[in-house]
Image (tube, rainbow, N blue to C red; front, side, top):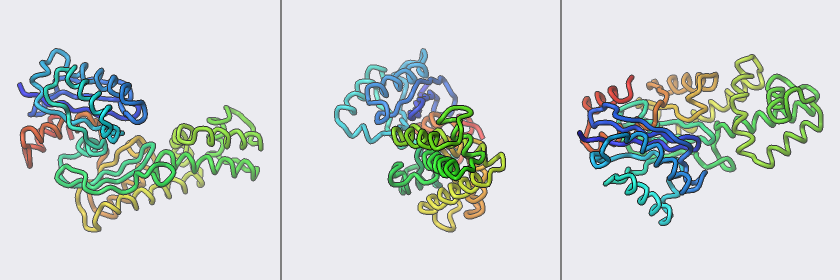
Length: 322
């Protein structure tokens, strides 16, 4: 039995899927964050090793013909020391052929569609859009980080929420969204005072990304509850994300659009707005990413067995469903 290995290593978790080239799942595994930039290469490698060992189970590693590693922070592997560390990890696992590193948005795309060409729109802590052609990334828009871009990301949403909270506190008119931010950053029931505004500002300045990105869900909660200020933030985020997608899609593009990242895979007003805007603008199917590790395993199967067309689609349905 010939096997392939798919791995999706993100900032918060790592998943691995072992499957046959015909799409039958043989094993799965999970562990903590495997982003070598966020956690350091040694810690990331340890988490990836744990997930792969779980997925391998009793399978002979020698039967693994190939694999794909969807890796957030894969640029860290350009460092020779990190590359050597990962090479030792694969050898220790008994894999004769190291999984090929790929951008994690590509495996997210493959988790939702077998179409060889389309695009993926990502909004998590950061935000970006990528054009996919021949199951390869050919064009990228945004993804420039929180200082220079990531428009419509969790950070962007959280910063907008914090700005609203501080301004409304100082104006003496803290609305629903501001109240949620106050409770989260200053404590439940904290008064809407100058001291509270200062405490919010201090928290944000001390750790911008770690403080602001987790506020993103509050915007959706407030918008869903009817807060017009929160709804306007959601509308602007949707507009910015779709504008980013337009940078990698032609006006007549009918290829699928895959939504990925925690912000866009979560059910809520932002995802609904983005889905509607994308479907209207391009008359294209809009799908939501699922199991990136399974997407990576499917991509590995396509490469090893030269799967294309109906056969690739059949293996995708068997492995991932849909």
